[in-house]
Length: 393
Image (cartoon, one colour):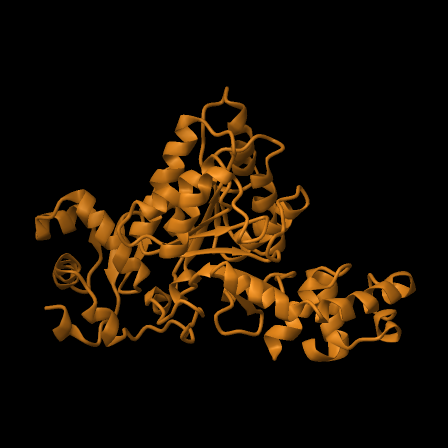
């Protein structure tokens, strides 16, 4: 029943996420909010006596649309989740104005808790497109989900970069209904994203892209992510809105890729760097800026084609799960066994393992994300306290 009430609120004309939260808080539940009369609505900050009657009428009209909207979602191979569902993204639930519902084509998984957004200009240069693909592929290789907005330019390059990795996951957040392909040339790309991740939106089926939709979409991009990387953006770019929402409203770190000083698309990232964003030239800059990530989020969810399911995320602890140790590659086991309990520089690890530097750096990234080693400073790593040492020798 919870989904039906949240969907009714989402379909109600005249109230957005913030007013909906206030109404639910005043009424005591989503169900009670759906039955609110004009008297209660007049007490809600932002509604008042002027809008109360119209919104009360709109609530009743939206109730009649719920069944039809759920049927339309199923017809386009999507499902709807509400903010009370276990499958609802945990980080998104924490922002000041989370969407009541999300339409999902594909699946959401627990490992999406470790996500990073990459956004930038629709009219990016070859450099911007190349770097968006490169960083997305690196993040996917490190086990992170890559989030972007599905638009032309940097966004599309980001999704393609994530999908270029065999195990890459990516999520596209749309400023229209999930059944509306915008831009139209991304039909095949969105289908691939739905197979390897999710295409999501808070807007109902059939909703066309509109200018006012994209700032709302941007807060979801940053809200689902532990941080945001800006690749190229001029001074009026919507990517800067995403960066501001991430840092000012959601307390998430912002990363910026430097560019040519004579390129107008470098203005946005350079200003962000001046104002405190992390200057980013490699994957390690992002991992350092994010800090420790919960290892339990790395395990995929059990899901089916009709509903995204999610196992509860347990808080990270110093005690290593045996399951994590069992799911290691031979190279990761070798690294853990050779490192011992002392600090190990990359140069020392090369000497004692005989592996190539690129391979070592990639595997160290995986082990850091799994919580099995810890980067202390510079290029020095320390193996965490491993209870199940027999599994790595």
